[in-house]
Image (cartoon, rainbow, N blue to C red; front, side, top):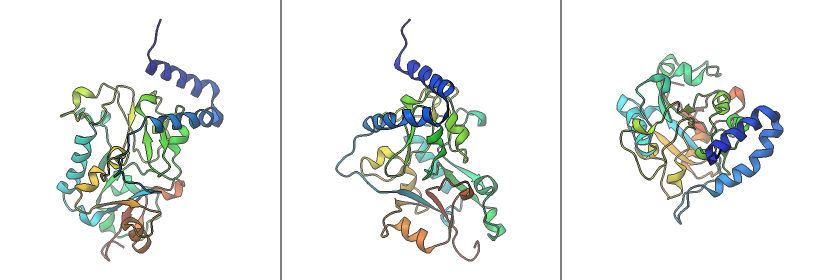
Length: 268
C-alpha cells in the first residue's frame, strides 16, 4: 500500500512524539527540519524588508470603533485565505479583538485605570523570543526565523496540536474540516490549508519578502507600528524606549514581540 508524503510525515511525527519522547526527539529532529523549511520559503526580492528582530506596537488610542478593528481583521482574512466556518468552536483566527481579562490575564498591571481595562484589544501571535510552541512541535512545522518571526510550514504539520497546547495566548487555530469551501474569495497568491493543519499569524512573511509591510499594518491608520526592535532608529524601538508599553503574560518568560502602547494620563 502506497502513502503520500503528508501521510508519511503524519505517521513519522506521531511515532517520534509518542515513541521517543523528551527533548531529544524534538531537538534532534528540528535542526534539519528548520533548515529545509527555510529553503522552501518565499523567494525574496531585491526590495525585501529585513530586520534583526521584527516587532509590533499596538497603539490602542487608534482603535476607537468597530470599524478600526474590522479593517485590520478583514485585510488579514482576505489575503491569507482564512475560512469562515460560521461556528465559534471552529473559528480560525490570525488577528482578532478580545477583552482585557483574556488579553492580559495574570499580568502585573494593577495600576492601570479601569477605563483602560474596559477597552477591547487587538491580539495576534506574539512571535515570542522564547516560543514554547516551537519547542513543542515534533516536526519543525513551526519554527523561529533568525529575524524573530515564528513561522509555519503547513506541509510539515501533522495535526498533533502540541503547539496549541503550548501556546499560552490562544494564538493558534486548527482546521477540523476542509477550510477551502468556507473561504469567501480565494487569493491565488497564498496557499490554502488542508484539514488537520494548524495555522496562525506569521507577520506576513510573504509580503516582507516582496518589500511590503504586513497587511494589517498598512490599513491600520497608524494603529499598528511594525519594525526592527534592534534598530535604535526604528519607530518601534523609539516607542518602546520612550513610552509606557505593556506585553502579554510576561511572567511566563516567553518574551512577546508585540507591545501595547498605553498612552495619555487617562490610562496610565
